[in-house]
Amino acid sequence: MKHRGRHRRRRRGAALRAVLAGTALALTAAATMISASQATVADDPGPLKRLASAGGPDAPPLAAEPVPRDTLDRLATAMGQPVGMDAVLRGADHTLRPADDCPADEKRALPVAPAATRAYCFPGADTATWRPGAVAVSGDGTGRVLASAWSRDALAKVAFVDASDPRHPAYSWALLALPVDGGRDYRALTSDVSGMVWDHDTLLVTAGPRDRAALYAFDMRRALRADVDSAAVGRLPGGWSAAGARFVLPAVASYVPVGDTPRAAGLGLDRTGARAALAVAERVPAGEHRPTRLWRYRLGADGLPLTDTLGRAVPDAVYTTKATEVRGVLPYGSRWYLARAGGGTDDGRGTLWRQDADGARTTACGSDDTHRCWSDPPRSLSYAPATGELWSVSGTTLFAVPLTTLDAALR
Image (cartoon, rainbow, N blue to C red; front, side, top):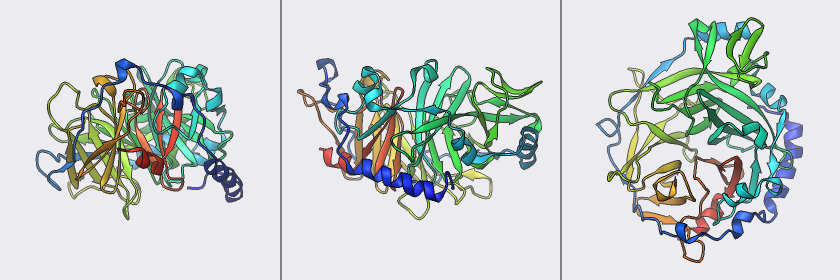
């Protein structure tokens, strides 16, 4: 995907490499000591267990429901044709703050061990009434662009961050929308986004428990411009509004559970194979004494889940883990990284585990050698192969940790 031009990427790439070659940020979180109330050692979830490779009750399919092409085209024509991600990034009208300028509470919520090497926070005035959700690295895996999802009431939007210049990351908002009335209008996606991945030009996001779909797919090339600045959503007498966002991303497909399929709590993307694979984690509360299931779906060259002759996406692998309260998931070959909420709630610092067929490892920190060293609270995980960074979000702050640094800190 072309974002800013090769000459600008080369210039900014040099700046990015210079930052990555430097020492880690002296973040407040690195020096934070964990209180006694947070010092409980997390239970070891043990090894991953692989179940059926396809089919069966533990591998239920998702039925793909594409939005008709003429519906998408009608909406695009009415709004002035798609502008694509280049225009979204060129229109960036907000700037993230570097870690040194972030509020003290935000810095204290960052991981303690290992410490973040990069961190940026959103301006409070821009996100004050919104809830942070998932983060995803750009579809080419370079990490030059980040997507950060936010929700409020019956709205969901994504900040597309141009991080090609690490000194001045800028972003613009796009509302996640569903075409209605055959493409003559659109409505807002009314779900919180707890999981999100970006492969090629496709953004996949989770849907909430009140939505009949489990996942929605958005095509970056179909980004549209909203020309009315108001709190409304959809077609107005004077044009098109996106609840204050300058752009709209209309869904191109939904994936509906077939049978009693559990809801997705987290999404992850594995880029280690010839083609990327989608990982889906269910949410199992700490009080439920049953394993958490993890599913893998193969993705096509377009970034959409591959489907069979019946139009269903069927997992090609299913795993179970004893880890509960999973908030973020990242598969990396045979290894899986799981971000877990601490204490069975979204409050308090969480833990980050690496699991495989042989067992599980995590980090330790603080005077009581607690395992609760990750962000407060933990959320989704995304990996940028080009820089080797694992990205996540805590409150209003996006942060990165080199995967090699994380692995070195595991015990």
